[in-house]
Structures are given as structure tokens and as C-alpha cells.
Image (tube, rainbow, N blue to C red):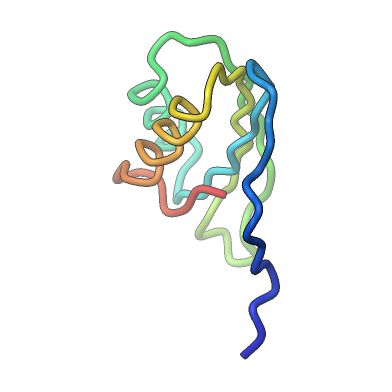
Length: 89
């Protein structure tokens, strides 16, 4: 099996920067609740992305300003661990 993205170099970002997380869950309202619980009152933009063919899953884009790599990773891990979020890309 071939690994498509087998990069060894580290992603170079200049902070602060705009970052987008794609969130996948069962319901829009549940995803919105998860976001409120993770980032609290922080300014962000949430937009609808897609609905699965069967309608079982919905995806949304969360855009916000990230100030450092630790913060970017913390938000990713907190969203990924939330019960209302099935996947974070």
C-alpha cells in the first residue's frame, strides 16, 4: 500500500493566521453546541459545507484566527474529542 502524504517536513505557518477546521457530525445544532463549548465566546465564522448523500452527516467549516501552534492543536484535539463531532479535518 502506498502512503499518499508521507511528508517529513513540518508545516510552516506565520501566526497569527486564519485557520479552517472542517467538522463532521450528525446535526448542525449539535456541531454549533460543540463549537460554543470548545471556543466559548471567541470570534469565528461557521458556514455550512455539505450534507452526506443519505443525509446522515453534515459538514461545516469553522474559520477563526489562531495565534500559535499550541492553540491550533488544542482546538483540534478538543473538537475531535467532543461527543457531537464525528470527525475533524
